[in-house]
Amino acid sequence: MAEDRPQAEAELTAQLRHAFEQLATTRDQTYAQVAVREVGYVTEVGHGIARVGGLPGVETDELLRFPGELLGMSFNLDPESIGTLLLGEYGHLSAGSEVRRTHRALDVPVGEGVLGRVIDATGRALDNRGSLRFAERRPVERPAPPILHRAPVTVPLQTGIKAIDALVPIGRGQRQLILGDRQTGKTAIAVDTIINQRETGVICVYCAIGQRSSSVAKVIAELEQHRAMDYSVVMVATGEDAPGLQFITAYAATTVAEYFMELGRDVLIIYDDLTRHARAYREVSLLLRRPPGREAFPGDVFYIHSRLLERATHMRDEYGGGSLTALPILETEAENLSAYIPTNIISITDGQIYLSPKMFQKGLLPPVSVGTSVSRVGGKTQLSAYRAVAGELRLAYSQFEELETFARFGTRMDEQTRERLDRGARVREVLKQPQYSPIPAAEQIAVFVAVADGVLDSVPVESISRAEKQVREAVAANLPDLCRRIENGEDLTDDDRQDIVNTALIMLE
Image 1: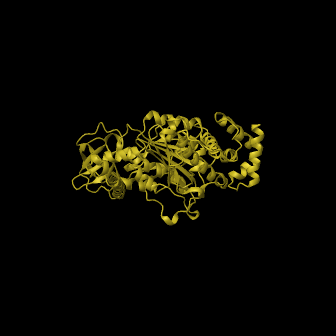
Image 2: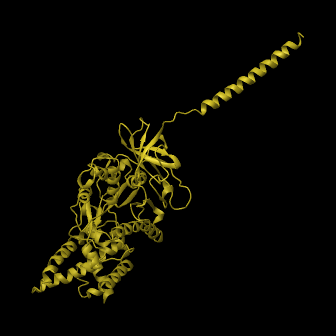
Image 3: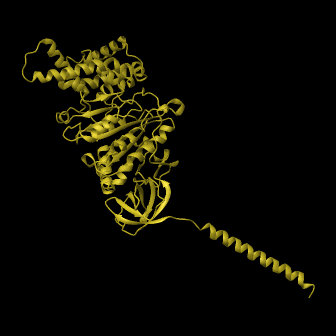
């Protein structure tokens, strides 16, 4: 018996050790599954909004999770409840539904993997091409770059549209508003600008806010047809989506664009359009009982656009040297440029391109109103060769518009006035341009030199478009070195002008 005791004690010790190990393992597993969750409940559901109770610790712009994978963003932090913007389909939601905090701000995926994709503001892929590959997620609301980090806007962003590149130039880092009545070609100008960036290395972000699904599908098809989706991102919130999703989409698209800007790249972002963005904000604000002001817009409607457009800039070299150019689109009613939202955004941006419905009805496309459009950055961003011809071109066209009004009354005109009318008519024909046909800067300048120096004076007005095409093809084929120097920003000398004139004359003989 004495001999068996050590063996029994050893077995008992082993059993106790095994029991303690199992107990420790069970305890670790039990504690690993314990977590603190703040859970609230829905008290009221409205059109695109919900009021939530039981979550006193929620922060501004925090992401909340509702049943059915529905996301929401805290918007109003009232003492009794939280006003929430719903960011998806909410038909299944009802009072009493559970709400959980996520303890993170609303964010969006960014990175090279989003290029060529169609997504929404929460990062969901909408193009049926599988899951989204991204580098990281960044907050939708981000502060604008500090003033001391910004550099002057000096590099042009060529749209490929003659009337804009010559008369209303846009620079990389500029904020240029495109506005006009319905169906005047605002989106067409934006799409042409994106198509023209194919060989420039500029990343493009097209943000559709409140548009019809068919309209957005048409834009995407056009971009794919012209191979522009390779360097573009399309972020969509259609008119059928919740107003909260329409509101945050503009900020989410800007965050995606800022990722590339901070890598030192040049980015173009299109907001199509900010009129619907303002209306979506007005809708959710009124539903959440925010005080209405002029035209029922809340008092901070100016701020929602200023904090958005202030994020567009050109960075200094020590901060990456990238740029973010913003082209917001705005819809006017009955040519009223002095309405509330248009005047707000005109005061924020660095210029505007106004599309006249009267010109559109006459077939003068694109219907850019030269007298109403302006670029506050101006010739500082233009290629040097443009500055040699743009001034006299604008002057000739402005004089033509004034004289044409008097000519309608049958006023007798001297020879000099008649020559100005003939020259102006040809300038107007030259500024016409079909959609999806952006023109290189060198070819544009060749045409402007030809019309300014009288080469096209003998060509009938109805034949100007054919003569213009011949001039462009001749200059591109016979003066490649001159075209290269123009594209590189070199000055246009008198000899260069004469070479263009001679080439054009030979082609038109």
